[in-house]
Every structure is written in structure tokens, then in C-alpha cells.
Length: 395
Image (spheres, one colour):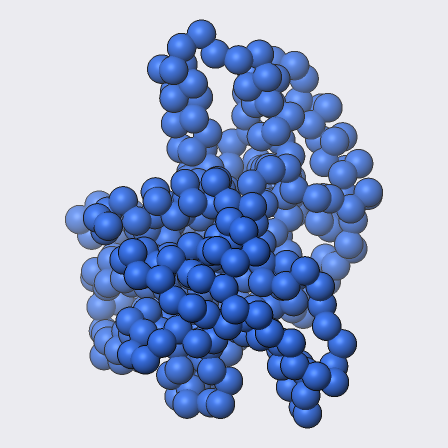
């Protein structure tokens, strides 16, 4: 299988399967933690990919299937529910001795599992950021929608949420163009606030708020996309080229939204916490860090103390892209460089390389546990970063 086509083949497999699932491989999944939990952990919302029901604690349940992997090899693999003793979890185990794709260096790779029949599956391991983004963008997904079944149709909404989204769609009018990514992000925050009334999380739990906003934007985007594009699809096409052009437009829009989503919501969090910042500041060599604290003017003022400046990059996934941020701001070359990501898990080797370059990862707090145990204390939550900036402002 040709590497550059791996994401495309995974996408086509999902579209042709009955059910599909994806997740970032954690350090626990790849065996880096040294724990006793062998195999890939499956969260309860994704259990339908391996079992037809959730089981009660008290006894184990398992079944065996055949999985064809991206290299053409097939494994006879075990789906198991551990329900005895203190355990209460679902896992995929028995890949065979020296199985290639569950080594520690694959921590942070995207695992895609597709069900064809009760006994036959296909699986892919996407191990670089370009492949991961290509796959997620094709389904309009963010990393926050992983660790669950992949929804290839319209998303399921709660009643109040559906009503709020429909009000927004109806306000667009029949000839309205698709809303820009920044507008979509703002509407998602407004709807999320209206329905769940957790605006105080902006200050007291920004990690949760970032995940909630990102998930809400995905649901709004999918609903708007269906409302505006489905009539065209239903009418049909006069040629294959016409169909391909629409498909390319949809994919490009999904990619554009996913690329800017994290940056848009981080900006809203910083504003909600009354932090001084500026986005897309032009620095040396026409480079543009995603965020400079407190401002571009301060950065370009040689009399402003360098230690009071901070840069933050925002990359939805960063498994092999983190080096791109190293030279974005010459004044801060010797300072700690912060990188916010929704990536869940990175290998020990990459964590060591980041530390050597003074790069500090900033991730939503629930995702820190997906990283190698010995590095988790070195990773900052969103809340910790915000408090750090606040303290810098008042120092």
C-alpha cells in the first residue's frame, strides 16, 4: 500500500463499511506505560464497533474476528470485555507476536477500525499529521470527535440543540452563502452557551469549555452543511465533473474549518479571561505566530522586556509538525515556546525532542493522560497556561 494514499484508503474503507471508529493511540494502548492492560482500549460510546451491547460487571465476554491491516496482513484478533474484579473495560487484544503497529513510537497515531461483517474488519494506523488531518477533514471531524463511532451522515442532536441550530439555519435565508469559519465558531459558542448555560466554565474550567465549543461547532457545521448542500445533491448532477467539483468544495470547506477552529476558540477563551493578546502578528521574515501575548506592538518594541512576551502556536494535530513553530518569533528563540494542540498522545522520543527545543505542550486537561506517564507533569492544561499569562501580566 502506498503511504501517500493511506488516508484515502482509510476514508474509502469507512464509506464502504457498516460501522467505523477512530481514536488516537495512547501510551497505554501502545504498551509504553508498562501496565497490565494489554491491547487497544475502547471507550463505552464506541462499544458498538466491537459488541452489540454493553455488559454488566461480573464476568468477561469476548469474541474473535479477522482484521485486515493496511499492509495486507490479517490477524485473528480478540474483542474482550473485562468485567471481573476491579476491571470494567473493553479492549482489542491478540494481534500476534511482535505486531508492528503497537510499538511505543506509534503513540499519538490515529487508529481507524471498520466493520464489514460480524467477523471481518479492516484497520489502519495513520502515523503522521498530514494523513491524520486528511482523514479527519474528510468527515469534518476535530480530534475531539475521536474515540467514538464515525458519523458519516447527519449528526444526532438533542431537541433544544436542534431547535437552536434550526433557528440559525432559518435565519440564513435561501440564497445565503456558507458562513465563514469564524462566524461558525461564534454561533457554536452562542448555541452551546444558550443550551447548556456553562459560560462560567470560560474562567473556572477552560479545558472543558474548549472541548465543548469544538464539539458544538462540529454539530452546527454538519447541520448547516446538510441544510445548504443536500438540496443540490438530491437534484443530482449533469456530469461526473460537476459531482467532483462539489465534492472538492465540501472537502476544502471542511479542511478550512478544522484548521481554524482551535485558533478561533482559543481567542474566545483568552478574551473571556480578559487576557491581552494579538493573533497572527507578523514577526521577522514575514512569519506569523498564532498568538503573541500581550501584543504585536509589545513584541516589536525593543524596550519591552522579552521575558514578559509569550508566543503560543495552535495546531489541531502536531505529531510531526511541532518543529514548524521553532522559528516563528526570533525574540523568543531562547524562551519557552508554547504549542496548544488537540492531539491525544505523542511518543517519548518526540516529547524528548520537544523538551530539547524548549517547546511546552498545552492540551485540554482530560487528554494529558493519553501521553507517556513520565512526561505528563511536563504538559500544561489550558487552565494552567491562562493562569501563567495572567500572572505575567500582573508581575
